[in-house]
Length: 487
Image (cartoon, rainbow, N blue to C red; front, side):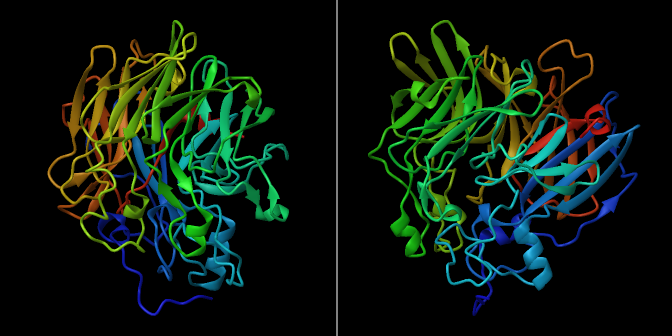
């Protein structure tokens, strides 16, 4: 085991980024305000949470996955949290201490436990074919049982999953399909003896949970491709200049660097096409962690996403000296909501900035993923710390070109807001936005319910939670009907 001479320090191990250790359950929680009639189900969010003290390097993306769930049933609210029971988590739990560093630098080839802890399941969640999956950037989904948040194991679609599974698949609720990709930044697979593999592969899962298409897509180099988007007839891939460099990794540095001399490339592939059919469109150099949505309008495919002119991966890594500038991942990046229009007839590209507020974790009403939506929701990063802390949720009216902001309050910070439609909703935004909020004044956390039709108002309901919920990544709302009929 590799031991550190001194404890690893990082801003991402402090404050509300700091991990918690306990798995707890609590019933009949106090509600401030009132739970709206019709809101029944479970809000689950995943995020990084090292189970033991970090022994070597810490990158925010590298912690063990932990699920936090709030369930509303018959007007009563309960909470529970669970670690994602991954292979690496079990190995360290058996040892009683950390076995690997938590960075994303060079693999630890001299580590007798293996080169890394691997799949942490700490990034995002998706519901499809009666199952909830927690996801990671480069491994199989982990199947999660509700409401207990138990890990049933990894899931490989009956052995037909032949490549890594993105943290951000897209589910088309009109067709029932799930579209996803997997990327390999190195271009070879150590598990297969160093065999050469495509940098990018794309797959389609039918409504019955069967993979019906897998195809490689040619890329000139290995890049970090965190998200993509789909429209009714296309899947849209982003070949952006966050480039993988093996030599950097071998020196213990972050293997990823942003190459400002490369353009941004967006690839449109017919949804059920072969990789050779992809058509690339070039735009000014930038990076996108997360897309809001895509849709088709005449000859154009329209993509909305939170765009950064560059990205500083070192801002999330404890191996980088914690100067004020090194921690500026977002606040100095002009990261904001943009729109691209790709004309499939002429090949023209039009890029437009839709807002100037620093935003991330964009979401739409899930029923409209891949189709034109009027409204979108994003976390606003407006704190003074230079850290990715969200002081508000923005509701965008993409038709009117306006927005409304829900402020969490002084020294209160949230995360991704997930839209939940009201049963029998009469409009696209008839429902609620739910999230977790950390209250820096008390050191506690709350589950909050916001009226999506009245975003600027105080929450309809606040539920103080029995323990602090550290900042995490992505969440999902699962209705009681889905919980009752899960597979």
